[in-house]
Amino acid sequence: MSEKLTIVSPRDGSVVAERAAASAAEIARVLAAAEVAQESWRRVPVAERVAVLRRGVDAFVARGEEIAREISLQMGRPVRDAPGEVRGFEERARHMLSIAEASLADVVPEPRPGFRRFIRRDPLGVVLTIAPWNYPYLTAVNSVVPALAAGNAVILRHSEQTLLCAERMADAFVEGGLPIGVLQALHCDHAAVSRLIASPEIAFVAFTGSVGGGHAIQQAASSRFIATGLELGGKDPAYVRADAPFEHSVESLVDGAFYNAGQSCCGIERIYVHADLHDRFVEAYAAAVATYRLGDPLEETTTLGPLVRTSAADHVREQLAEAIGYGARPLVDESRFELARPDTPYLAPQVLSHVDAAMRVMSEESFGPIVGIQRVASDDEAIRWMNDSDYGLTASIWSTDDEAALALGERIETGTVFQNRCDYLDPALAWTGVKDSGRGCTLSSIGFESLTRPKSYHLRDGSDVLGLVLGPSGGGEGE
Image (cartoon, rainbow, N blue to C red; front, side, top):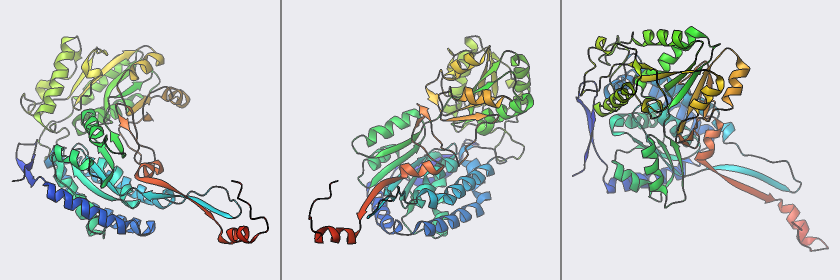
């Protein structure tokens, strides 16, 4: 009998849905169907592929209200915020489709008489996308839509916590006219994923998840010459300079740290504030965080939902207790958050001052509603602490001096540098990370490169060859 995969809602512990884990025979059928479908799909002109995919996006957006509510049920995001994921999915999908034809066009070097030369971007074949629960659609769309536009077939495997999301995506694109087999949802356990990656049908793996998960993906792919795209999270820093736009910085950095209960790979997890602003900033920041309402994610008044599971909340509780033991000062009165109780996924938001790099809350990914704020005396000190991390996904600088922000950004070891904003993916820019935040790139025109392989064509004119054969010298080409 197949193993059951179950979505247990952090909202109240209820079962949202159950699915049988795919058997070996079912996985083999999915792989075979993907290979057959891809052979036909790759021959469809790019413009026609894009038209089909746009209709799929239309179908997805049309179901947006239902999809958003399911997000809240599956992983606990407040229902007032969940529609933002549908909008973000649409923004990224439509942008990548708008640039697909230009990004996938032949690359033609300078003319050479008697020759036709160009580089064509061929699809890889079958792409496996493994998506997490925290932003189930926003992470999946980054690879799924450009992979399909490039002529690949895609097998989409979502986290057990949000497995309904894979079904919704696949159904929407089939409704839009995508041929059966080109995009398939697959529900399977971790062991089956490893076997799937080792299958000769899989040509590329796009994974978003933990560092440990990234190592497992690499291990599974190590016996094969296939590439992997790994987006593995972060411990993203912010630096508030003395010339920062104060109110904007406070408001934006509160949202950047506590949106989605802090469960964001590019959320703000540590803040460095220049000494000239530190005390004022900390006071205003803590006051703003104290206004959150922790509650049932299906209630419109809730601004902070539960974490995805109790073990995730316990991880944050451990970091908090350790930091306080080392001298950090909690600035938010947790007693005013009635639902915040031990042994539940409901956790009060917290802001810590008097922190330092020795505390796990400033070095280890938290993935929860907690942030540490550290005083710094200079730009150089801020950069030193921002780079003192195993991660490098995004970093933000808050300053009204544009040239200074750019100069500082060039010194930060990160994939994306923000000025006066944070926690946002612009689909026109490359989404990438350094160090343990992973490797590879999605979004922008560069995002198509890992989903295709270059094939060079060096074609000599037939008339030119005929002239060589019939000519008086009969010599070689001399190349």
